[in-house]
Length: 263
Image 1: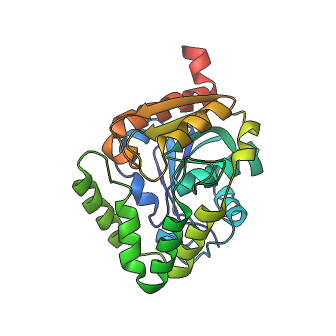
Image 2: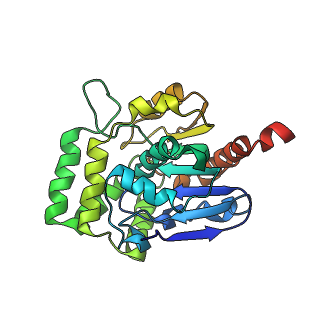
């Protein structure tokens, strides 16, 4: 079953992948500007938004579903959970990815003995337990963490609440599978093999994926540029859309070679 994809604009292809519990509409603050430079593909991941009837399976199953609707030589931008999908897409289907943007992303969401840049595993496990009892409340609580620490946090939380209502809460099995993926996935060993141009975009006040994760990615990826937005939390594309759009426009030029030709 194919994923729901909304297309806007014309130009080089830019694929946007959202985070856990939301949908492609989360990118609306950026979409109008980006559509002036790109053909933008707003994807609803499996089990989310208008793709709710497509099962959310393993990471590779999700990546393959995204690959089926991704044009060759696209700039692929993933936020949070979408960043994990984008990273694996770049290694599993490299012909599809000309450039990569990782927004508030991490190769390993959960803290480990050799990885201090993650969420405490017991915190994520508590969310999974609460999800079984009160799914709607749990997803609201988790999504609100996206805004915590950033500017106008209450406004961002209201925007996220409206987004959740817009396309409905994802089915509980999809939410549980997504949390399990965040808990279990560790892509650190794959990062060094990604030679495409990469923009690592991270907020200095992110409480879900600490700044250290972004700095680690930028240091290990062979062709990466680190874009720090000091005042942003986990939602830089909502709180600082201009800065994120500029980073994506610069990356798109690198990925297509236009930067070399014109500057």
